[in-house]
Length: 326
Ligand SMILES: Nc1ncnc2c1ncn2[C@@H]1O[C@H](COP(=O)(O)OP(=O)(O)OP(=O)(O)O)[C@@H](O)[C@H]1O
Image 1 (cartoon, rainbow, N blue to C red):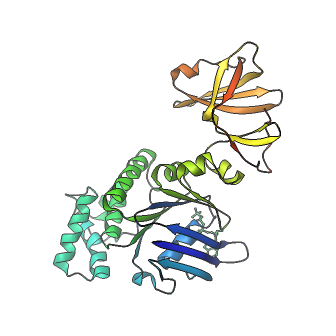
Image 2: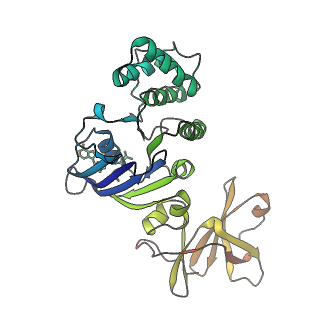
Image 3: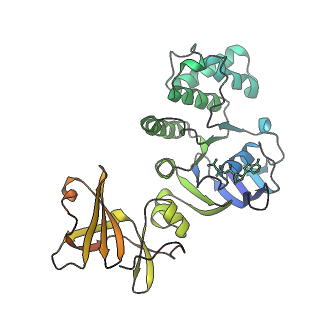
């Protein structure tokens, strides 16, 4: 295994921190740590980067425990949410700084390497620009180039897209994935944004209250969540009771047909653009159905319908859920 976190523990007090975190990362893999605010994502990343000292556990990189190494001695680079660029330096100075510092290259060679990475991230022509004269997306690219140019074995990214507006976020998401594949860099990415995690990752680590609750591919965590917490945190979920057993059914995995004798009634309809959200009720129980496409906007509040569950997976319901029991 390329990187192995073994029983990694760091507690700030009785409740806060991370406890017995075990994560395996393959070389070239894009791993996302996903979870709500305060679940321990940044703590995990900072332990890998060496910015925090662990209470116990191991971090094995290619079999060697790096836990005692200071940050600058670890073959790891971090892209922070704030980018942490040097505002008084221009683009090429920012990118070449790390090459001189970490790779101990002379100025000429460092500038050559920096130019390569500036080209890779699509900033050719901006070499002499001061950081303050760049847009958020361009600053993000400089931060990426600066980190990648130090040639780390692992790139750590702490919510690097969160300061960008929605459309730029999606563009940078695609660019990041392309760069990762092109350069075959192992990346560990932290986010609380499920769509970012689903679209970027080879593997998602879902955390809750300082613990890992599931590790799997995006499809595994989405379609086969290990517990109710994961089901409710990623995507929308209906918990339905069929013959005494509880199942998770995603709102988009339901087909709906009009049937005047149908057992269910549409009680609410919200047009969301990409899909239409229907609330379909039977007595006091209800289920959410999301249907995409213009054709599927035809259903009206009051219509009697039949429902067909296209995909369901067995699950224990979270305590706070009322079982819809259709
Ligand atoms: N230096 C610290 N001292 C005390 N408590 C801390 C410290 N750093 C983090 N914590 C607490 O530990 C818990 C985990 O924090 P962490 O920053 O890892 O969460 P996170 O999942 O990255 O959250 P966010 O998405 O908000 O950044 C939180 O409850 C946080 O308040």
